[in-house]
Image (cartoon, helix red, strand yellow):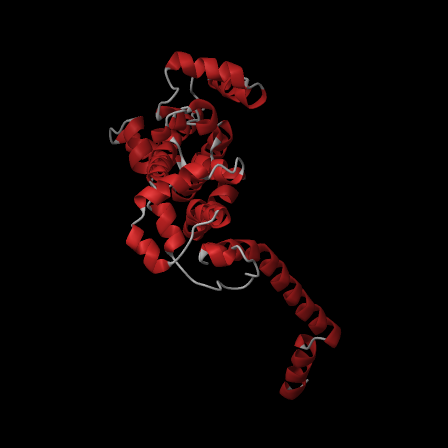
Length: 312
């Protein structure tokens, strides 16, 4: 067979029929429409929050703001109730995942030692809460006895251990070469030093996955604040959003906004804050930070879940 014939056969093999091309085009169009349908609600909330409140009440805003303004965010961000809640949420999101990682990873590293006395009994003991958990009333009385009501520690201590994540982290640790730990033990390093100097630095994907899981849980949680917190200084932003969207309690925020925002600025902007705009703006302030953080953790998230969940 000549070279020209070989090239001709290759072109015939690669060439696709019009039905295949039509299917690919339809598949692309379908996926684009699905993506647009999923992204449009976020876009609608964003453009609604960037529109002047009095004009937004007239409706008809679908693709972009009709009267663009940032005064809605100035109203919300200058509210002391939102600022305090944001500070509490940020502190909780920073401290909680770190405690969760240390406690869960330490348990995973310890239970990964096959020569640990009573190893199986410890695993069974940690597994029980997954199937038999305390009721809301029993947990409430327990937290009262521990002094966690109206205490910042109620946000970070109860969820500091997760058996599910412990199993995944332990599986990841078991895939690390045992020779590294044996060499460190021969050189005189203890288990604590091995854990923090060797094991954790080599477990970047699973560490990032654990931190991201825990951070999302802490950021989105409002139930803890709803049940165990009554002080306004310890509220989180998700609870503020719950009060605005679910209970429609915007009178308190509007009254505080009227006393905190500069009157001259309001006159220049000629913008009137409305209940609907306040809901949309608060929703953006509370939810959108996660959308910007997730892309940076995505590669670690996928790799950590796949490697940690499958035992070699």
